[in-house]
Image 1: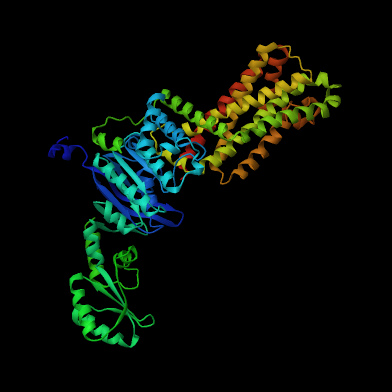
Image 2: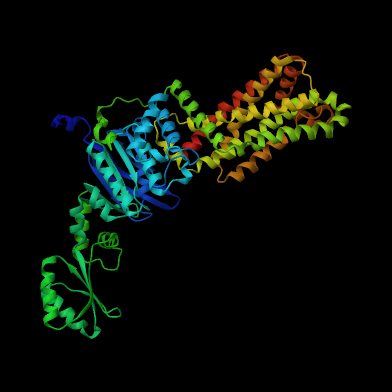
Length: 341
Length: 274
């Protein structure tokens, strides 16, 4: 293990990524509209947002694939525009759609990329074999990629990004479209990468994924960072899980609402058509009390479930352009937004 | 599982890196990219139909249709028409380069090429270099057809070989024009359309098939300055008498100019494409 001293941090670029006011416009559409990001070396940074939020465009600019229309970005202190060729030696990019050659086999792909990265023919073959083994693709190594499953393609794509052992890896939606098992394999791989000292910047549509993997998360919407912080920070700003109750007899709806207000001390949302009541659940412990109360009062439930905050709710809360932008949520969003200035 | 877990990655700040790609590296990258092109041909050999069938059919057709009218008989026409057909066939093959480049660039793998620390020109120059294999096939088949039909080149094997190399070099240079269309066009079929529109007049308004002095004055004037005519004449000199004339020099000069203009244009357009 190397010891990192204060000197190292001060003079050796503690930031893997520094972006200030990145802008990219496509015609009238400001796909990225002033994004600021700071990713500390050796961490996993999650960029969370829905489709079309500007995640891929942001990554493309950081990875020198797109020229920013405004702002600037540095990778380990190297400007992405002026020193693009240096930056390319420091990064690995795994795109949303597998960026490997469909007509070639897995081995041919990896050997090709390794040769382009300057490895000798022999070293390239050895590296390809090593990576195929690492990613469990050895058996399929000689088959054309046309017959590969989505998960296999994604693994090969990631393997291709690791040939040069880059200190910074961009993963654009690494698990979108993967089945749960393949997804958790991908998560393990990402964790192992970080254990070797890599910095990872990943984009995702899933709050859960960002929460599981990322040390810090930026929520991005309509080309802007609307919140930044740790997973806990974000969850605190979004609020808690919610409790959903469905009644056997819809006539009990008012009684249920009163009981919830009394026991949980929150105002529930009532959907009379469905006979359903939704209430924020800050403290799971007192739910027991609510259930006991309901039994005592003879209010019979047909269904009970707990809903975790979804990305939708994160956006509703953080961006305010949802149906219910309650005061506290908007406040904490502003607070988080202020912290990036 | 071992590979990732055991190797520690050199921190970004500890690396000494250059922001430039040297010429020898650029050449190495081009050769590797060309190797990719050859692998692709190996995987989908059907993409060679045009370079195998066109020389055979065109050579047969043109020689027997025009031979009697232009040169009295087929035997006398062969030394004139074979170099003409050769140039026309090989140059029109270079259109395919642009079409295939367009199709190729739409694939995800080009994103990876653009994120790698390689010479920017390599994905293009490599694809173009691999295409010289296509020109080689077309050239070989055209000469073989000519030979079967009775052409006995007085320039000898050396002259034929030199002519083949000259045509391939010129076609490679011209393919930068179509590569440029390939990069800027939105669809592969539009590349085909634009390229044919340019190439068709260029090859026919030349001395490839008939003597320009039989044309109306404006056409004759154009046919005489047409670079294709210079190339055809240079090839005829080599094949029929084994000599190198001014046309040889003009052909190479023209090719160099095309590359000097279109290679940077193409690379710039390629880099700007998202």
